[in-house]
Image (cartoon, rainbow, N blue to C red; front, side, top):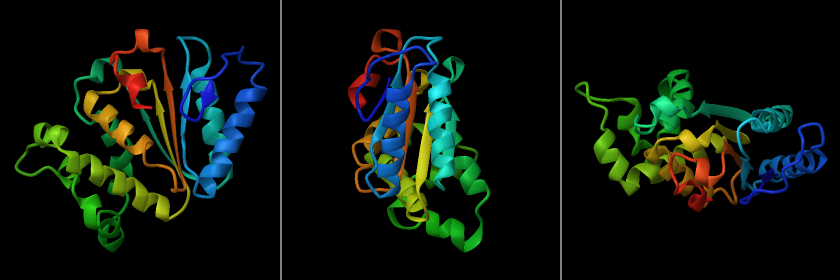
Length: 200
């Protein structure tokens, strides 16, 4: 059920030794700069949140900073909603030179998502823009450069299309970073976006 790129055997919640070992290995690899995606896939009620919590607890014990988001069915049309859940608390808590360092270089490209001007959100241009995805990747990379980072997204099958595009972009580039991207999702036939499983 937990793996680096593809789903694995789905077992009862009380018999998860294989999944726990896979999570432990992925956290260890990410800590050393060998980041990979962790996908926890299964139907509703199989215990995906419990496995994600196990991964979060294990990563926290290893000194990881953890960013969390939970996608929702009623927020599916909110462009970059999951991305905002992940990064807005960090940016809101970071001021002055530290904030500018996080948004330095290419990481400043998605600034309009978090600092809208004239009451606008910039959603439409951002959603179509490769530079926004690239900038969000560098924002994550800048955070990971400060220490191991875990990005944990629950119910990713409900994520908005713009956020899924970024998840896709990041998942293909985490190798070499101290970053663990962990997701829970339902099988493709139960996902809001049928393209979701193609991104990882």
